[in-house]
Image (cartoon, rainbow, N blue to C red; front, side, top):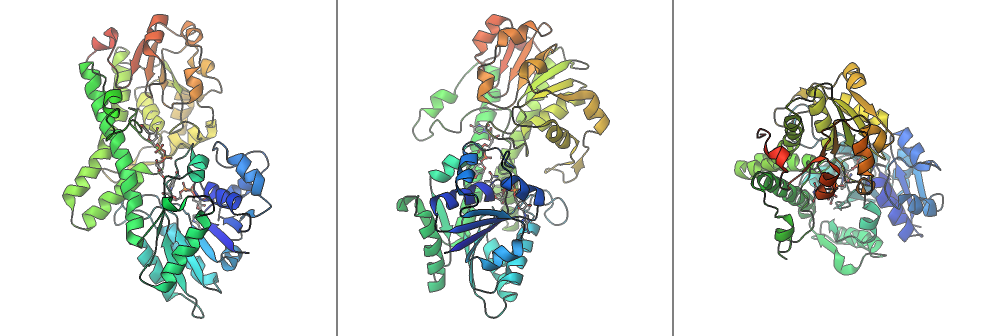
Length: 481
Ligand code: NAD
Ligand code: UDX
């Protein structure tokens, strides 16, 4: 029986390995992590450490059969023929490249563990998103630390799943990308071995093979393109509000542009887009391409602008002050169908509102109070001017932020409601009931275009929908920058 080990039981390692185990019952798949609570979570019978639709079922079907979760990193790496590395690669916060470059500390430590414990040849698969040419560096670490002539083949196999749809994305990927050393027979054999795993359920024409550095750069480029699309539509959303035009639907009908990923929003979040673009910016600078770096940097600048523009709109609409006013925040996760709050725009919006002394009441179906408090009290690294921004002190969080387990409770006695995540349940809320329990004028700021603004205006709300023509009330308010 072939054995696969994956180092890193996170949002990528967990779901990806669970799907491989489901589709390849003859392969033993072990996911290892240095975090005991994470592994306990994966082994728990009631709540997995991440919320992902359909994942419980996949894990339940293979865990204990050919899917294991363990903290015994050394043993399972030593026993495996294929080792995936799916550890976190966050943005560096100190030293050379701080604020932009990828921090490869976890990756390097995983590579050193592999070199230390291996007693047989291995295929090492780069699953984490890494800077272009990382595989070459890892090859050197492994080759220089190899014991008893053990040989390693490095492959780059970046992951393209999106959170909230991870299981579907893994079942039916647009493509699987495998980069390897096609110039050597061992390299070609390694690519063929990994390809044969995916070929159990992915059509051959969707499995693309290429060289190592093209696979690495494809991942950064794909995320940069996706994020650029959102910043483009968000930039246009500001102009739509100013002019009363509404264009997303009509431009999406152009088959060369297409309708997907064109939803204006309060800003993109998640652990990938900002980090990967900053990484791309850093790489461009290192290769002496400042114009290219500055083009991609602008994608993040527009995203930051969109978040502060939203906060300014809320404050200016409400007579230029939210001091002491209760503002209900519906949605804290960075997108629907996940409990992940990494880089969620809700953190910046809540900090902005509390900065203007609002009292914020948050409801999200998947985010706990503890998580919200942690996020708001966390040091936030300013990518543009590398330094840590002041976190909210625990006493400010306690005085200004509360978390509610019910949307109506969050909105009770509020002056305004802000929708920051596009959870389906927010489309079905009884907004008349909410309106009746709010102060008047009752404002609704929809950062995700979840509600029908006309219907809510009929109820009596003053409605702001991102990227849509402003209603009369908002037009009369001073312009926001
Ligand atoms: P994560 O933080 O959820 O998980 C990473 C895990 O690796 C953690 O549990 C950590 O404890 C573990 N780890 C770190 N060093 C280790 C070591 N030496 N030994 C054992 N375990 C170790 O991260 P994630 O969201 O799963 O992302 C992993 C990688 O995949 C990143 O490079 C990310 O950019 C990329 N990626 C993420 C997504 C996504 O949607 N989250 C999608 C595509 C690619
Ligand atoms: C992204 C990539 O899509 C995925 O391929 C990669 O592997 C990891 O990074 P993810 O961050 O999980 O996935 O979710 P995604 O659906 O891309 O959304 C990212 C952010 O953009 C979210 O905050 C989402 O709400 C926002 N978004 C998305 C918009 O604001 N408008 C859109 O039209 C689409």
